[in-house]
Length: 243
Image (cartoon, rainbow, N blue to C red; front, side, top):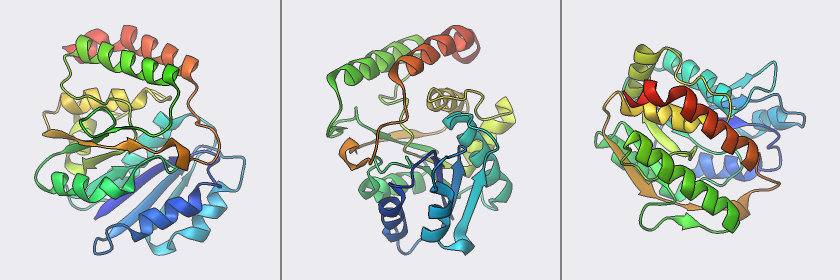
């Protein structure tokens, strides 16, 4: 089984294209869609129900807006509780169509060859950005280089939502650390990556072009707030996750 885990917040305008991409990809695979809605104020939830098959769909509606980290944690927990095979895969994607679904067959092929974590990487050879400000590129580059150096990381991309996890790896992370994710904001992707590395999976990166032009509306990530969360995370977790 392939579980698609999608955190969403006010993404109603992006969902039709997302549904088309996800429903058409991997036509011979059994797919299940898990959406976690972060207390949207538009008709995101209703739109999800109208676009995805009810028998292969779970929508988790949160009582309050608590950020993507909280959404991922709730979604991962649901998958772990309902998956019956450690070889099942969880594909985490953006709700705004910036994840390049065309590379998913390659990502899953790697996952099926024993890689417990497959990362879509804009920094791997062949990856990149189709439309992103120079300031945002610089901030992303500095953050990636800093955390790679401090935590001795071999991967190039640490913050992308777009990944493939094996359910077995997620179970090992939960067994070792309790909650898979404690951080509420976008730093959550770095947190679970560091925890995953402590469980010694095989990891590989697949080059991806980040398609910002496919997004309707603005990114939900606030650069200043996210930068502060990275610094706070570093001071709070450096010794614990480096050991």
